[in-house]
Image (cartoon, rainbow, N blue to C red; front, side, top):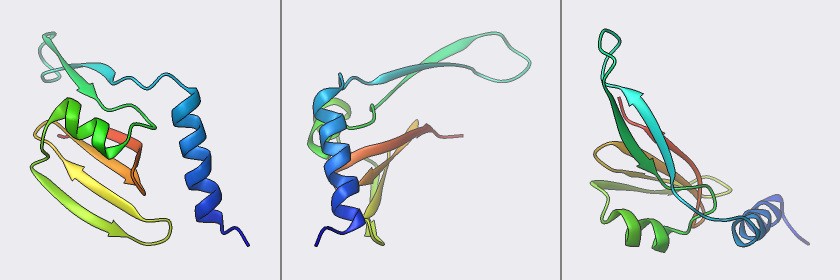
Length: 95
């Protein structure tokens, strides 16, 4: 019997294999009073943990997976990456 987590993980794997897996690039103002922008590259959805580590290096901290499906978090200096099993499901810019 397939559990929902298996279906979700399989769907992410298929999505990751069928889609172009590239890092996302976001331009953000440095603060609200200035118009200067900086660029932050984020891991793209569907990237594996191995791909993230290869492209972005070692994370400052790695929180172990919790729950079902297993969700883990890697924190870098400018962004945080959330994984389901071993694939990126979301990446956000740190404040």
